Length: 146
Image (cartoon, rainbow, N blue to C red):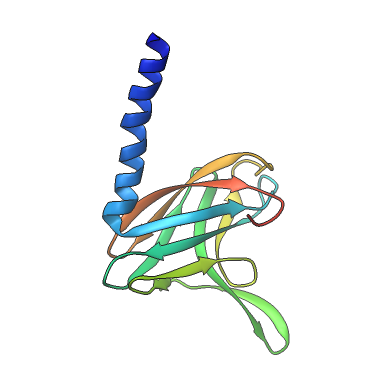
């Protein structure tokens, strides 16, 4: 019984804190995932970013202990060739709207991985928004999109 009470108390302390940060910010993040990647190489992060606020916001930065740095990139076709470019201005998320980080489009480029990303594992990412501030997200390493 003691264990149950302790577990419930911990869940009540942790869950509202995580949810409150995302709810206060007006930003919610869902389906955060990454493909497996080797240590020392690069990886990519994908997710859906929803903005419940009445004003637009912008994803301006990201960081994680698993990568030396994270850049916001956009993939596009130029001159018949697929290319990706960093977008230092960030990704706009419309008011009461959403934006997607997905393969073949906008994504987070995890550069200089400090550890391998293995299927089934998770890792933390801090997303920084121009207005909403920092939002902590857990990414799941998967071989296919959720």
